[in-house]
Structures are given as C-alpha cells and as structure tokens.
Amino acid sequence: MQTPRIALSRAAPLIVLALAACSDPQPAGMTAAETRQNLNAIQLHATSVLGDAGAGQLAGILNGIDTSSVLVLGAQLPRGIYEYDHVTDTWTLLGASEDLELRWSVEPSGEDATLLIDWDATAATVVRDLVGGEVVELPQGSSAQVTVDGAVVADFDQTATWPVNDCGYLSEPGTFYVSGTAGEAAATLVVDETGVSVTSSGDHLSAQSHGGLELSSSAGRAWLDWTAGLDLSVVRDETTCAVTDGDVESGHVSFDFGVESDTDHASVGFATNFDVITPQAPGEKLALGLSGGRLSLNGMLAVTWAGVLDDANGNGVPGENLTLTFADGSMSLEEFLLEHYAGLSWGMRVAGALR
Image 1: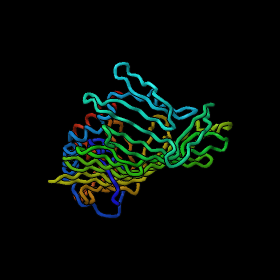
Image 2: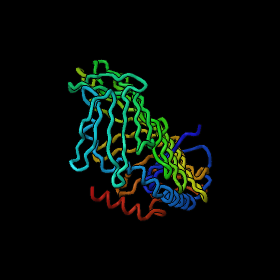
Image 3: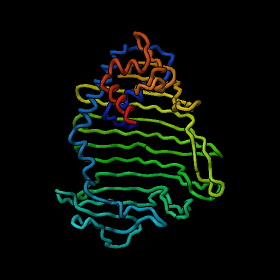
C-alpha cells in the first residue's frame, strides 16, 4: 500500500533547510536558476492545493470546543459521558462509562457530534510513577472516533509503550504512534504510522520519528513522508535517572513531499545526516557539519553540497562555508540566497540584527 503523505504549505523555510545538506556522488542535473524556478513553482502549486476550501473544513469540526478541562492526564484517565454547553463553555457529566464520550453540537449548523475514546481498545492501560511524585494512567492501544449526525468523520488508532528507567520511573516515552483518517467528501486526511520512539542506554539517548500524511481534496492531493532522528549525550539524576541535561551530537532527516492536481504535479525529495560542531572559542556559535544529503525536484537531482552550515562572517545570512554544486557550477549557500532570494536574505539579516 502506498504510504500517505501531505505537503508543506510554505517553501521559503524549506529552501534554507533543504539546501542545508551535503554531498552526493551523483552529478546535479539542474542549474542554480532552474533550481530556484522549480522551488518557486512547487510553492505556488502547493498553495493552490492546500488553499482549497475543503481542506480548511477539516479543522472546523472541533472549532470553538475546549476539551482541555476534560482531557487531563492523572492517576486515572478521564472516563464518563459528557455534554458541552456552548453558553457556559463547560462540560456536564451525564453518566459513567469505561470510555470517554464527549457530546456537543457543531456551530453554527447545530449538527450533533460525538467524540468516543476507547482507552483500552487493543491493549490494557498502564500506571506509571513520574519523577515528580505523580502517578499517571496511560494508554497503550486506544482508539478515537468522531461522528457528526451519525456519520464517522474521524477514526484513529494509537499504540504506545511507556518503559520505566533503571530507577523505576517513567522519564521518557518508549514509542507513540497514531494512524487513521479524518474528513468528509470535501477533503480527507490520512495519517500513516506517525509518531516517535525513544531508546536510551546510560548517558546516550536516541529519538526517532517517522510517518506519512496525505491530504486529498477537490483541488488535488498533497503528501509528506519522513524519517528523522537525533542522537544525544545526556546527564541523568542519580536518584531518579531522569535526564537533567543533554546535548545533540548528530542526527539525520529525510522527506518526500509532493502535490498533484488534474493539470500538474510537483515533488521535493531531501535527505541529510548532520553532526553538531560545538564552539571552540568565546563568541563562536554552534554549527552543523553536513554529509550524505541531496535535494531532488520533480524527480531530478537538483543540487548536492558539502561543508559546514554556519554564519561565520556574522552577516545574518548562513552558508558561506557550505558549497552547493549545480549542473552549471558551484557557489556557497550564502551566494545562492543573496542572488536568488534577496528578500529572504534581507529578512535574515534584519532578524539577526534584532537578536
């Protein structure tokens, strides 16, 4: 089955991130100007798909409903049947239940809506002691379903593990993943095994994330698949084994993003590994050493690069030590931004001056 995905709606931040990668043995197949043109075209196409009115309706189901007073973690997970009063902005307990059922009317249509959370749909809940002395009940296999006038508009499943550390406390999660769908005829969002996992051993901790999102509407389809990870050195409290300090040492990130409609399609592929370069002298700032990455646009390798991502000259525009290689030659990231994204570069300089 194809992995679902969803697009990013703004390309400007993506430009800096996507060009902050590293060398690749394949030769780049685009010039610097072609790369800029393709990035701009992808941004415009993504905006047209994500700006569809049907996509905006996805967030409207819970609009104006405050569930913070009900969905509170504690010694027991919230359970019972509640009804929402729009006038007083409060939830009224109607009766007992082993699950959590929230009822309200959608404004302004007045349709009856229900959120039903089955905390132990596929696995029993667990109780864990936290470092601060609190006790919490947590789900390992729950499900959540939203219905409007009897029709299911959202259906999600969750899996998780909550390991205790060597001192007997829960100080970081093990895994947490969500899958499911949300939407009606106008637009549908699919979430595919999206979440995080954390593993640790002694003074080392590794956090990984992967997932897939896909949005479909009358305007077209948009998707995002990703994997990412961080490796950290950590310091733990001797009594609780909780992390009290930590430094990121290295990591990796990759994603495939795309949009398509009846008339066009566009895609971006990105991957990189990075190492954190810590300051060696007063006044120096953190920098990233980049390796193993590339940027592809519409299925074609656009640019490769190698070097250090920093702002050593202090002009507010990063990348003078990161060399980009295009089909028509090489330049630094800073040169690319100044030449092809003057407005973005100016904004970076202003932001740097205000810090």
